[in-house]
Image 1 (cartoon, helix red, strand yellow):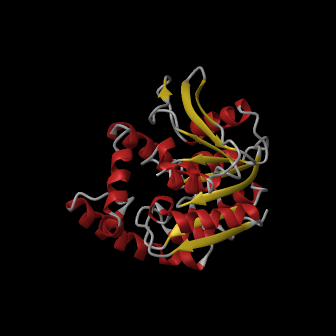
Image 2 (cartoon, helix red, strand yellow):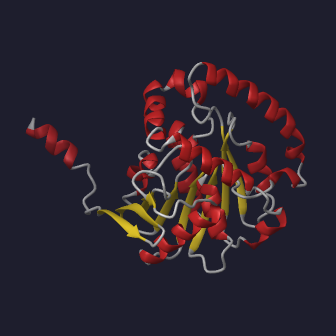
Amino acid sequence: MLDLVNAYTEKMPTKNIRYIKDFLKLPEAEIYYEIIGNGPPIVFAHGLGGNHLSWWRQIPFFAERFTCVTFSHRGFLLSKNIAKTFGAKVFADDLSALIDHLELKDVHLVAQSMGGWTSLNYALRPENKLKSLVMASTTGELNFSVINHPAIAQMDAWKTSSEKIKKELKSKGLLPATGARMAVEQPSMNFLYAQIYDLTPKKYKDKVRKEIRSTRVLEPKKLKDVKQPVMFLAGSEDIVFPPLAAEAASTLIPNAKFVKIFEAGHSVYFERPDQFNAAVDNFISGI
């Protein structure tokens, strides 16, 4: 048994990987965050169905080479929403305060779904500390319906198909953010996602969803103000967010690219972590 232990420990990283858990206490909220790893900073902004726990398949991959910062938006476990306010600007204010508190610079920001509202709002601020931005399954506040791009012409067909699939999933007790493929191919992953999803009260998630969707009014021309390299990433089978929108949005920013992950739904980072991690790694390593 000792030989087995030694054989495996020899393969472990030799440098100490720091692990910090703490709260950023603000007048309106207490933001829970974790710092794991060493190197250039990557900050992960989770979606509506998640919290800081969502990135469990990303952190072990990146922590040996990067300082990984995960946090929970206010109102999402374990963060507290003292002021009972939320939305893109409020969430971005919290993100900005966290980045400043941790004295981070040249940040690689990775956003998933709702986190895209937070992250794009922050990226459009002149004082942002970003080096790059990954928008996974999201275009945030962007009003993608008015983008002049061939992909947008297919939006009505995508909506019709997606609504039919959502109704079928609901009848079977499945979440649109995971879908049938994950439920069949990866039942344990599907179960874990649902467990994390339920950690935030449904009423709060519904209120946040309604609020952020009402702010999807940003004019496409505003994206030219994003100066950092951006990667839009989407799953080919996403029925929550249209991959078409990500493809179209990628043409609005000079230093942007679009990556589609096939046989993946809305939660690519959860369903296809190896492909997600490789895409993000290749993107930020090339900057």
